[in-house]
Length: 246
Ligand code: ADP
Ligand code: MG
Ligand code: MG
Image (tube, rainbow, N blue to C red; front, side):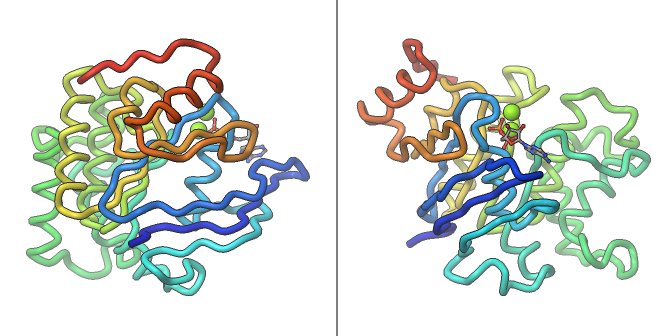
């Protein structure tokens, strides 16, 4: 059962080749971490999988939950796939609650009132990321970590079957990194599919599967708990890999 698949994905931006012929099957109900050196193409790949890459030449095919991504209308896609980007921009003057609500009403914006189910999802998401206390404060007043937890809540509020996150732990202190880990495990335990680019390899190794990228390609894809994955990591990062439980 494949949640996200990619066939022969290539991307180039301003004539520079950034992704080179990527084939990928990400199983449903599992957490896949994506790692690799800076500039490997991790963020670009995630954007292609989310259908977000603009100003770029993208070739190849992406399927989301068995359908061609390009054929899924934007509103439907926004319910099936939740996204938390790297250095995500947001409406800085909106209260945190309204920012999280954008996960529920991305297209309707404020034209239609939120339903009870929308409010329930936003409340739950803000509690999950411990951002409830500043629900009335504009994003611009929050610290980097507080802001990141609101943006995570926005992604969780979608309650999508597939969640893609690019460096979600940026700005989070260790206790909130641990919270994030528990949240991901809960989602996957309920059958969700999570894909996260992670900077810290020791945390990335706690996923189910690992995708290792270098120079615009996938150099390894396999279970985190395998000697082949550990060997590939050591080769790509040219150092001993230590597993740290958090
Ligand atoms: P990673 O997330 O693995 O660090 P990225 O996917 O962000 O890597 O970038 C891969 C490569 O593509 C890098 O060399 C980066 O400089 C280049 N790149 C990314 N976005 C653009 C862009 N909009 N214009 C030009 N080059 C880009
Ligand atoms: Mg980077
Ligand atoms: Mg990146």
